[in-house]
Image (cartoon, one colour):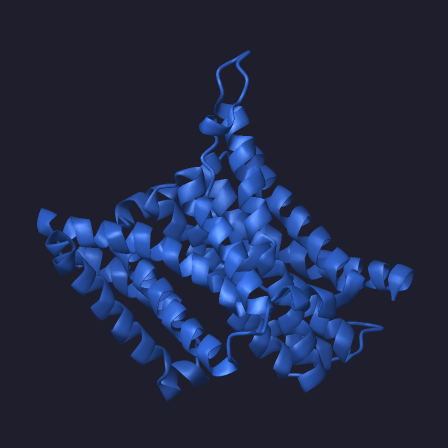
Amino acid sequence: MKQIIPGLTVTVLIAVFSTFLAQTDFIKETVKFSPLIIAILTGVIVGNLFKFSEKFKPGIVFSLKKILRTAIVFLGFRLTFQNVAEVGLEGLIVDSIMLIGTFLLGVFVSTKIFKLDSSMGYLLASGSSICGASAVLATAPVVKAPMHHAAMAVATVTIFGTLSMFLYPVVYKAGLLLDFDDLLYGLFTGATVHEVAQVVAAGFAISDPAGNTATIAKLTRVMMLAPLLIVLSFYLAKKHATHGAGVTLRDIPIPYFVFGFIAMVGVNSTGFIPADITQKINVIDGFLLTVAMAAMGIETNINKMKGVGMKPIYVAFIMFLFLFFGGIAVVKVVHEIIG
């Protein structure tokens, strides 16, 4: 246990700094970066400026693996199964189409057009299609992605998620989303914007009904992270199996923390846990995710990121265009059929 203290101290201090900085008026009124984003940026700077000795390694790895998976489990306390019911069949269909479409497009464009490593493709796709940085963090161990790939994927989420957060309200207020009311705008925002915080900002910038609908649609999308990771694990196990050999359960790198996530959603859905306790759990969980982000940043080699080049940005831009224009089309068509 003592060997993790030096590295863990560093990641916790970066998380504390990032949490404090994210709450300052300057950050809130300008770039609106979450503690997660600040933590990974700070971690990258610290990790590349200072070469940590081996005694720091166990604590950094502990933050990146154990703390990360614990945080993803308790991410379930942000959701309930009732959220799915609230968004309705229309919202569920829109969320599903956009998630599957964006994920498949991201993987295809990454690996077939830009010839990126498959792990990079999965990270870019999960970040844009589900819930931003949290999805990247959860997907990374499943696809065994190197840290500089994960850091690059988080960077793309930050760029285009932030762009969406500012762009969507402007486009809607300008009347360019024809036939959209506040509720449809909320559904569109929740189904297509990257991070939960970005969805909340873009939704409530219009109205409370738009913000509430956007948040519920987004949380339903977040809940789809668990089945996606399980399916991805099975797919990768089958893909990497030797020719002609069957795939057994033992061959599949099942992300067991996902089942913990689902269990916490179930517990939260019972309503037995008071709202103030749930809120405290979410605050602690957010801090744990920030600690994990700090560790990811420290483990990221800038030279390796430079080696990847601009291709991930191009992929993320294509997914951004699909999310925006495809999202408008999907919301309109599904609403015409079901709404």
